[in-house]
Length: 265
Ligand code: PGA
Image (tube, rainbow, N blue to C red; front, side, top):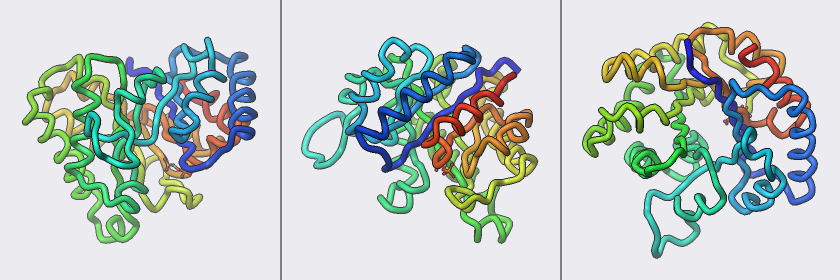
């Protein structure tokens, strides 16, 4: 496979000016020793800290890129509390997490909202990558609904992109990254076994294959949910897991860099 590995840190609603500085400087220091340009490495702080983290990354922004945890699909206007893509672009972002289960759950984001967000990022003539998150609850997994849930979440987005006439555009579509994040594994310490995670990632690749074989070969499909340095190697060794979206473990520089070092060796 010639897909570039992808590792994104989702800081969620954590951090402060002080702890962000320590974290970023520690990551930079440890990573320069093992810089591996085979990996797209992204940190996604809360929006209020974008400027701080951008400044801390400084020239290293070439190999540690900046991302965000959300975006509005509206371009501007009377949308209190929202942040537009143009605003985020002022900070040279490279990726946006879209449709994280915490946003689906606590902010009532619908599949249509998520499809619109993915489209708003992809339609830009730019390099920004949308990281589309999908995943099932424990009850859904236990009742054998995993594939139906995932199929539904992915299809809603792909259908919308088709309606907007960009689904056939390989160059645009290859910027898409899909993150399989089983909800029962997020922040719980219960990681999906490498085989189970790979099974769903493969299923997602097969869904994309129905659109284009070439695209399914190029799109990065990553895994998220209690990824740690002690399970990363096992997970990344699977053929359909192209990287990770890491929450808790990304707040600890040593742990995060260990995950990085396990990738794509
Ligand atoms: P976790 O979070 O690594 O803390 O489980 C992953 C995520 O929510 O993206």
